[in-house]
View 1 (cartoon, rainbow, N blue to C red):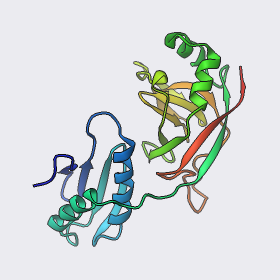
View 2 (view 1 turned 90 degrees about the vertical axis):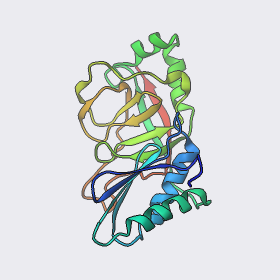
View 3 (view 1 turned 45 degrees about the horizontal axis):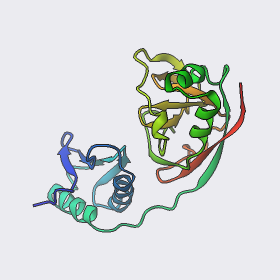
Length: 219
């Protein structure tokens, strides 16, 4: 029998398996296991794609090639073994906070009982980890947000949050790689391009990378 701390495995149709390692609140330690497992399973016979999420991992495979029983056994063995974690890059992300660049900053600070400068300082202080890339091309789910800045998403999402928006939703921070609907709070804007289909690696960040937000100015 798997250990109590082992992940939950569930088939998502005949050609996909979801590994759910969540044990309540998001865990950076669990996320490191997700990264290590995603890397180790890429060479599994019949594996098409490994997609890390927030404390979960989706495996897409060829059901005519993949031995599902062996795959599940390898998952549990890999989960309980110490795996090498990818050493990601560290990158500074310049941010213009507030004003037209961060239309939610003032209301966000007021709701938190903090000054605008305090919100900016708390948002820019951590070294964030790219827990997962997804939802839209190049979108980064960032762990490391100051718990005092955690906030429920907007009840009425905006139709088009601009590309480059620096945002907060729930307990995560993020950056919009394209203009798209979102219910996250917009605190600022960066000119850093997160996704370019013409690059060798279209997404600027990969799981395991880390970043710092560097205030350029506040309006």
